[in-house]
Length: 124
Image (cartoon, rainbow, N blue to C red):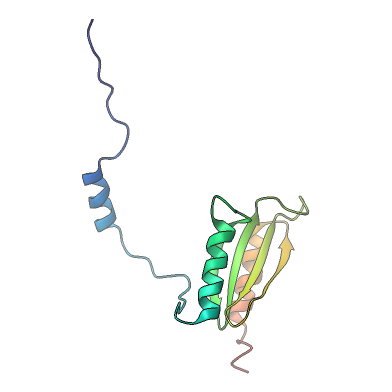
């Protein structure tokens, strides 16, 4: 009987390394100082909230504004099916998270852009 070897559909590791080396580096969306306990805690919280095992959210966008991370998220199990998106504010100064729910990701992003355009509360 003839043996047919199927052509691999995956990308070879050599090709993958070439792609990664040639890909342009994107600037970070938010930079944290993990030496600071509150910033490390916020980082750990976001990793847990978006991990496969304990996923609360799907992170769609993130920006830092002063001592706050603004995160546009989609809830995995929304409390209100009509508003499955939120703009979550994760504090980088204390253990605190708050959010506002939205019907679309675009509305949550618009709110985030408005907050980022406004002068920071720490500046004033």
